[in-house]
Image 1 (cartoon, helix red, strand yellow):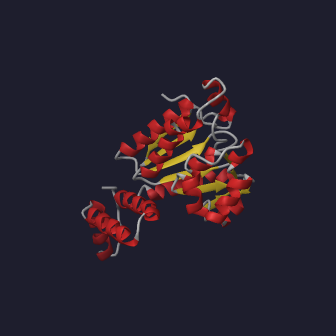
Image 2 (cartoon, helix red, strand yellow):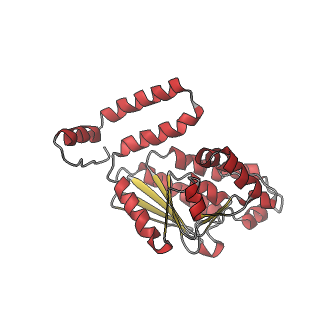
Image 3 (tube, one colour):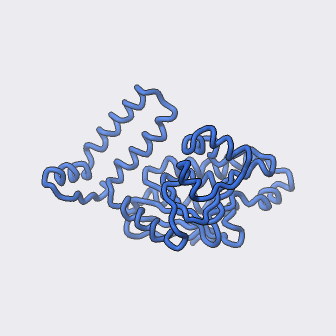
Length: 261
């Protein structure tokens, strides 16, 4: 069905793998379209309650396939127009998806690959993972949502350093500065990501979605608006079956069995 990604669903989890290993999973036009489509499929499928994004081969992603971009524009591309039809809408879809997205990261996470990793809600990294906001090395500024997401994750000072210097950040340092949530041995990465995804897939999906939306919105709102977002979200969550089950389980002193509804 897909040429540049692998996509499978089961047990409440959608697994999406970037699959251009010979190009270090650099994004071409086809991969953009296929990943956007697969994420939309997962977002609309009520049986899917968590999404995992990973990379095949030696690394997560080297970012954009520059050769294709240049060749496709006879050597003189309008990069802004390219972004509007590719990374801009892809990052928006990831951030706006009302389900948790896990990034299972290994090897190089470079350039726009950093933006895709940041658009995941939780990031688990193998010990061999390296992050580089490498745009400056080819005379460009960061894109793919990096200028929005990176300072919110690691702080303005560190985001400025990573963006201006383009130096690689190793996995342990990425964990120390909050860029990733966990670092694990490379051979343990699939299991760690699967365990986290399976755990999230048993949680109240509607509440997770509302939580995700409110947390992102908090950066662009004042306290009054944030409080109203909480009130509206709690009204919605309070009428879900999962809330009813959670309250019942609390009073019955047992573990809740959430269904995502």
